[in-house]
Image 1 (cartoon, rainbow, N blue to C red):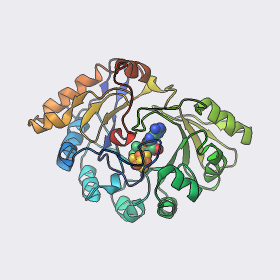
Image 2: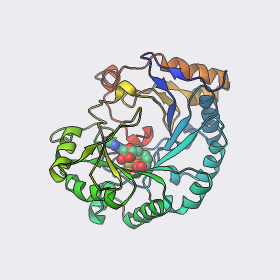
Image 3: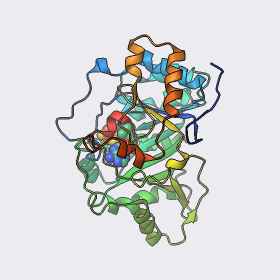
Image 4: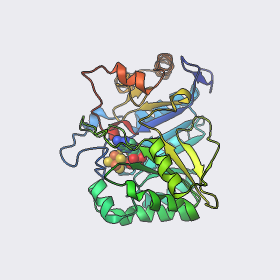
Amino acid sequence: MTSNPSILDNFGRPINYLRLAVTDRCNLRCFYCMPEKGMKFSPRKDLLSYEEMLFLLEAASEIGINKVRITGGEPFLKRDMVYFLEEASKIKGLKKIAITTNGVLTHQYIDDLIRLNIKSINLSLDTLDPVRFYDITRKNVFPQVMETLDALLKNEFDLKINAVLMYGKNTDDLPSLLELSKNNLLNLRFIEEMPFNGSGRFDNDNHWTYKKILEEIKVLHPTIQKLTDAPHSTSLNYQVPGYKGSVGIIPAWSRTFCGSCNRLRVTAKGMLKTCLYDNGGISLKQLLSNGASKKEIQKVIIESTQNRHKNGFDAEKDRGSNRPISESMSAIGG
Ligand code: SAM
Ligand code: SF4
């Protein structure tokens, strides 16, 4: 395989970004992601091993994937995560390794991340109120997450804060979260809630769409300015004049960004997904267990990009009425 050719999908979209869920397990129980009790995680033998993940990353990097986001579940809950990050950092074609984390354990690994030059971190934080934090995540670990936030800021990481906004839960946290961008060089991103909560139920009443979120921000800051969004950005970005940081809104449920989607996903169980909303395509885990070569894996990845859905609505429709979204985001990686 030639090194680093870029893949164009069947709609001409370049594909260079892979989101890899390294585990489906988590030390939080965010209610929009999974039930508080009775969450059924996959047996460990069904999850990708580090060896398999590194093999996949190497294969993908040779066909044009140059950015990977490590996600989960909670990546830092996984044993020997630093070893994995170290090995992944050695893969030549990967120009960027980024991580999405809930921040509970991350503060322990700041020095490792700096050493490995992994400076792009998305920290999920839906409120700055400890009581509400517990209400949302069902775990009493707010101080640990704050410790991570402080350490990331102090060490000048390229930091994005992900906050899912949910009517009746944390929409009145919008002003205080937004203020994080006042004195800190970070990108605060408000995300529309999606139905990947592991219950199969989704209350769409009073759903805060990106339009509503922008309206609310404009009430607080009528002079907010639109920024130029990076190519393939999923967020629409703005800045309050005089603020150091910026604020983004991710229309994750309205799905307005599909036209420039450059990403693939591999779930914790090794399913290759070409859209968050699809039903999961091919089992790379199965292929790897059957001894697939790097070339075979590359062929499967390339083929999957030639059958992508045009957008998340088509992908969701294709699941059929008997397969509605019922999975937890922890298995997919967000
Ligand atoms: N555990 C890590 C974390 O929370 O950052 C990484 C995995 S988590 C599944 C990745 C992202 O998905 C987080 O930013 C989380 O807020 C987001 N997410 C989870 N469930 C969601 C939902 N139902 N709607 C919108 N975003 C969701
Ligand atoms: Fe865990 Fe992240 Fe899901 Fe929260 S959003 S339960 S932190 S995987």
